[in-house]
Length: 435
Image 1 (cartoon, one colour):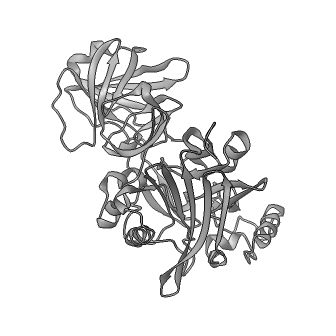
Image 2: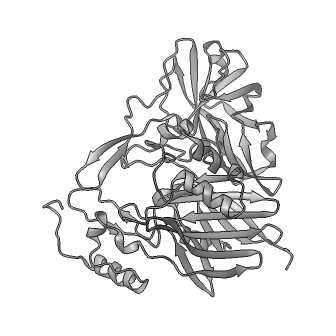
Image 3: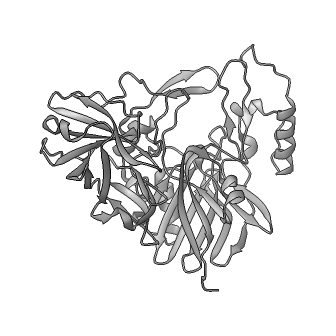
């Protein structure tokens, strides 16, 4: 431990140890959890409860062989009686906040977002690729990926193509994601989308936390192209989308606003500062039919089959490599939607989560088609919360620590709240649902 940090437990540490012991975890010292998390390797007892009509929770321990296991927490929703909403907040949220503030009776951690330890350089829109917030598309996808959508009020999961239509000052354009394999030339009516998902997160060693994540702001820009012009687009609830920056020849900051539209340089005159941008279609869908949505991770089958290059650069490391991690999954079959949290603590010996292949095997064992179950943000983000008998309960990532920001700070246990999330799924009763 850094010599500048006191090794005596603080009052906050003592309170955290008391809470952990009451929850059944034999923790002696909070600071030691940054090196050893064996205390969390406890199989959960079998448990099934009905949170509300059509909303069921199941907890069970799952053996993985050779003494290893995961704790599986499952939330199953009958969409005739329950409804789910993708909630996104650039400033962050905790699951328990959703339960306290809204009509939600359960909540699950959301999809992939930008994570960095450099608080001074963060994207204006941290949700990676597609994001639709309360009926407003705030971020366009750079690549075709699976997505969760609320379309005409119904939950839908499927591949969302990174293409569509928009207007700048009433002039129509087609747009395509910058990571699509087939890129059209600079045609007058075709724009290319860049955003936070184009960033490259780098990992460096850190003596206290093990590693540090950040982005080199000087190189975190759109690629240079003397034949192009980049329109930086911002979104506010009051004014919608507006062009707030124009960069001839590229070099626009990927984090400055919600996304960047690249056009042929001959189109520079059509995207002046404060020009209104109106997104009209995403993958052929009228945006007015969308109530919310998020890009998802790959299907369980695709992740188990091999590398998923569309995700690793903007996350810093590929979360789908053949290593055990906590995982969060989402799937939809007919009118049943389910979430799975497969828990694990990385600094334990036998409770580190599951590999992509083990994830596919567990899904198949439960009768779920791995081709139609998708990854949400895993690791320390894997968490769900619900209200049972008037009490808020949480499951997953109980080992979570908030890292110190300076040499004089301690690790802080935040297992009940977990990591600050940029997106989540809020589950509530459906008004007028069948009983």
